[in-house]
Length: 131
Image (cartoon, rainbow, N blue to C red; front, side, top):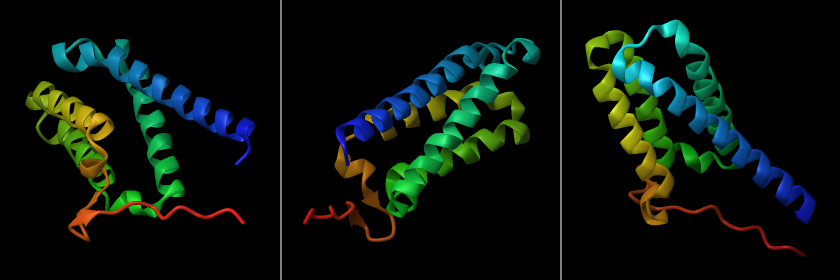
């Protein structure tokens, strides 16, 4: 991969992640404190759309993501988000759980993030050799 392509991809992914965090941060007050939905729903849509973009990028990069803990826990987070409609009285607790899970998924050790629930061990993508 060329250096220009590397930097373009890296900065693009970082920009999408920054927009995702902005959307989460801006909508959190509405979710945690029951603020009028009209005031924060746009930020929520930004968070959900950028989250889907990041998830799609991960799956396209490596299908192993789907069976690694980082992918599986992302789907668990989506189920917890869906629970907002089933048990709306617990939105704050669900939101906080999702936020804490996100930190462990993003910043946990590679051995945890790359653990395959299918293989019951760490699975990494094999690197392609140049030449």
